[in-house]
Length: 115
Image (cartoon, rainbow, N blue to C red; front, side, top):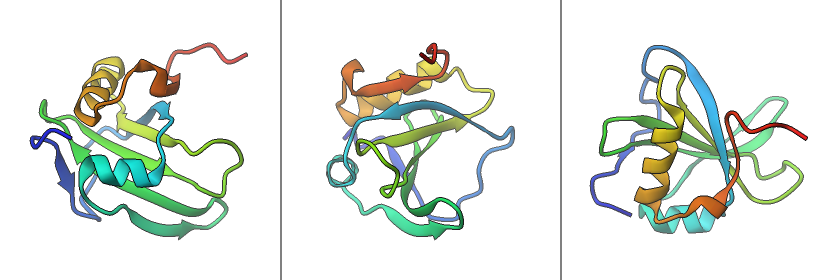
Protein backbone atom coordinates (compact mmCIF):
# COMPACT_ATOMS: atom_id res chain seq x y z
CA UNK A 1 0.00 0.00 0.00
CA UNK A 2 1.19 3.50 -0.73
CA UNK A 3 1.82 5.50 2.41
CA UNK A 4 -0.32 8.34 1.05
CA UNK A 5 -3.55 6.37 1.56
CA UNK A 6 -5.20 7.56 4.76
CA UNK A 7 -7.23 5.10 6.82
CA UNK A 8 -10.22 7.04 8.12
CA UNK A 9 -11.26 6.55 11.74
CA UNK A 10 -14.49 4.63 12.29
CA UNK A 11 -17.39 7.08 12.45
CA UNK A 12 -15.82 9.66 10.11
CA UNK A 13 -18.75 11.43 8.45
CA UNK A 14 -19.34 10.57 4.78
CA UNK A 15 -18.79 13.52 2.43
CA UNK A 16 -21.88 15.34 1.16
CA UNK A 17 -23.58 13.97 -1.90
CA UNK A 18 -24.37 10.44 -0.77
CA UNK A 19 -22.64 7.37 -2.08
CA UNK A 20 -22.71 5.07 -5.09
CA UNK A 21 -21.57 1.48 -5.35
CA UNK A 22 -18.75 1.68 -7.87
CA UNK A 23 -17.44 -1.88 -7.98
CA UNK A 24 -17.06 -5.28 -6.39
CA UNK A 25 -13.46 -6.31 -5.68
CA UNK A 26 -12.21 -9.88 -5.29
CA UNK A 27 -9.98 -9.57 -2.25
CA UNK A 28 -10.15 -11.37 1.08
CA UNK A 29 -10.43 -9.58 4.40
CA UNK A 30 -6.99 -10.84 5.42
CA UNK A 31 -5.37 -9.66 2.18
CA UNK A 32 -6.99 -6.21 2.46
CA UNK A 33 -5.83 -5.85 6.07
CA UNK A 34 -2.29 -6.73 4.99
CA UNK A 35 -2.35 -4.21 2.13
CA UNK A 36 -3.60 -1.34 4.32
CA UNK A 37 -1.61 -2.39 7.39
CA UNK A 38 -4.56 -2.11 9.75
CA UNK A 39 -7.52 -4.12 10.98
CA UNK A 40 -10.97 -3.75 9.49
CA UNK A 41 -13.87 -2.47 11.56
CA UNK A 42 -16.49 -5.16 12.18
CA UNK A 43 -20.13 -5.13 13.15
CA UNK A 44 -23.57 -6.49 12.37
CA UNK A 45 -26.32 -4.83 10.34
CA UNK A 46 -29.92 -5.93 10.79
CA UNK A 47 -31.09 -7.80 7.71
CA UNK A 48 -27.60 -8.07 6.23
CA UNK A 49 -25.67 -9.79 9.00
CA UNK A 50 -22.02 -9.40 9.86
CA UNK A 51 -19.87 -6.89 8.00
CA UNK A 52 -16.23 -5.83 7.80
CA UNK A 53 -15.33 -2.40 6.44
CA UNK A 54 -12.77 0.35 6.14
CA UNK A 55 -12.88 3.97 4.98
CA UNK A 56 -9.95 5.32 2.99
CA UNK A 57 -8.89 8.70 1.63
CA UNK A 58 -6.87 8.26 -1.57
CA UNK A 59 -3.95 10.51 -2.58
CA UNK A 60 -6.30 12.52 -4.84
CA UNK A 61 -8.50 13.23 -1.82
CA UNK A 62 -11.26 10.86 -2.99
CA UNK A 63 -12.99 8.96 -0.21
CA UNK A 64 -13.93 5.30 -0.59
CA UNK A 65 -15.51 2.75 1.69
CA UNK A 66 -14.88 -0.95 1.25
CA UNK A 67 -17.51 -3.24 2.81
CA UNK A 68 -17.72 -7.02 2.92
CA UNK A 69 -20.69 -9.05 4.11
CA UNK A 70 -18.94 -12.39 4.77
CA UNK A 71 -22.20 -14.29 5.29
CA UNK A 72 -23.28 -13.39 1.74
CA UNK A 73 -23.14 -16.38 -0.59
CA UNK A 74 -20.40 -16.41 -3.19
CA UNK A 75 -16.79 -15.38 -3.19
CA UNK A 76 -15.12 -13.12 -0.66
CA UNK A 77 -15.46 -9.65 -2.14
CA UNK A 78 -15.71 -6.03 -1.09
CA UNK A 79 -18.25 -3.51 -2.28
CA UNK A 80 -16.46 -0.27 -3.19
CA UNK A 81 -18.50 2.82 -2.40
CA UNK A 82 -17.55 6.27 -3.67
CA UNK A 83 -19.08 9.70 -3.34
CA UNK A 84 -22.05 9.64 -5.74
CA UNK A 85 -20.74 12.60 -7.75
CA UNK A 86 -17.20 11.20 -8.11
CA UNK A 87 -15.78 9.95 -11.40
CA UNK A 88 -16.14 6.33 -10.35
CA UNK A 89 -13.79 4.80 -12.94
CA UNK A 90 -11.05 7.23 -11.99
CA UNK A 91 -11.49 6.60 -8.26
CA UNK A 92 -11.60 2.84 -8.79
CA UNK A 93 -8.43 2.89 -10.89
CA UNK A 94 -6.65 4.97 -8.24
CA UNK A 95 -7.81 2.55 -5.51
CA UNK A 96 -6.57 -0.46 -7.50
CA UNK A 97 -3.19 1.19 -8.00
CA UNK A 98 -2.87 2.13 -4.33
CA UNK A 99 -3.76 -1.40 -3.21
CA UNK A 100 -1.47 -3.02 -5.77
CA UNK A 101 -4.40 -4.76 -7.48
CA UNK A 102 -5.10 -5.13 -11.19
CA UNK A 103 -8.23 -5.11 -13.36
CA UNK A 104 -8.93 -8.87 -13.00
CA UNK A 105 -9.58 -8.13 -9.30
CA UNK A 106 -12.71 -6.23 -10.36
CA UNK A 107 -15.66 -8.64 -10.41
CA UNK A 108 -18.15 -5.92 -11.35
CA UNK A 109 -18.01 -2.18 -11.90
CA UNK A 110 -20.75 0.45 -12.21
CA UNK A 111 -21.95 0.60 -15.78
CA UNK A 112 -21.33 -3.09 -16.49
CA UNK A 113 -24.26 -4.82 -18.12
CA UNK A 114 -26.01 -7.34 -15.90
CA UNK A 115 -26.53 -10.67 -17.63
